[in-house]
Image 1 (tube, rainbow over the protein chains, first blue to last red):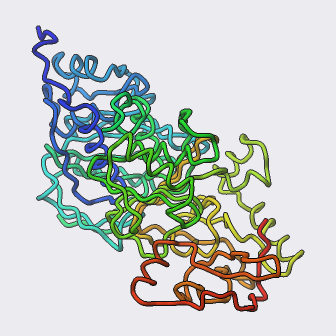
Image 2 (tube, each protein chain N blue to C red; image 1 turned 135 degrees about the vertical axis):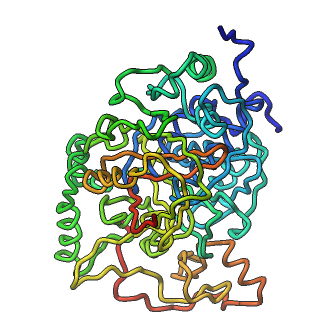
Image 3 (tube, one colour; image 1 turned 90 degrees about the vertical axis):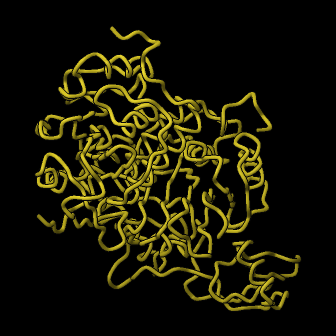
Length: 202
Length: 298
């Protein structure tokens, strides 16, 4: 059993680490496809990457219901760490979650099972935080949309392989939709609901 | 920090998290007004509490902050907010647009082109562009949900019917990313074209009305108009009396009680930069003829 003392630490400097992590995520969201770095200032429990842990400490609190996939919920480490450091409630129903933490992208549930927001309040949607293998190498994706000057190239090794096909639902649903934050260790790429894939290699 | 009694940048961390989450949603849904739990700030509503909260949530020790009020770095509001953050966050401040990483603004966009490393934070009094046409929040929310913006076009049409041209001179409505109609805050319509395809991130904070919205970089922003009455930025037809700029937005300054007046750049940093570079204006108020299209200010 893990005691509090054995939990990986949170930010050494809560205020400034949260600020710099937020700016990385904000820049990622404002410039989809661009790879932003998070300066790791905290430990990471179990299946959680350093980048995911920093995002959790920056954005989660008692106001943000979380949904964890089976990989994240494996063993008590992640749950305990989140509970101790953020106080965010972990829910079983993915459709009421503010954030969903996905450790195993291959087992990502259908996106319709998350909150998509309503036409009146499209902001009441789940933000997916999806851990991936790499945001530097892998299949090339050509992205287009607000925040991108022309097109942006993203090279990434992502599971599920059909993530961008699934994200087509954002096109039909807009302004409702799902925003995705991809994390690979300390690298972050955001794919907000306005981003479209124009072409991809194999 | 000079004020250790306060958290960095004044706001507590829980508040910053809440604002940060709202900012991320705002960027993901360009032009949509995200409700947020606006806090009371140590300044009255109307003095930029929304902009201040957004700035406080994004500001870091590495940032260089510039604050302008109607283009000027030297007015009470701008100086107060600049000092507020110098005191509570210990950040460097500047009046030079090029040096700033975060620019908080009331009612202007700087003349100098913004770049990718900058964030422009607008102070917004009334974020809802449809509010004066439809006072009920439930209705304006539904109109945004359905992208039902006919009423706004009727308003612009009525301008044309009454005045012969679109008489909206500031807070001129724009459509962001071909979806949401948005209030650009009471900037003169002269500034509207600068919002389109801007390399900098633009964030909008309305404190009293509790809304945050955003325009991501490189996003299409179109000023509403009609084919036969296209959008036209308005500018007094005169050079700046101090720096002779022909393409900057001008303030009209009354100099005596005999009708004397002068036109000077509203952007003080731009004007000072030009004067330092050797440009000199007439310094006197010539009786320039204004464009026929002069708009009423209300």
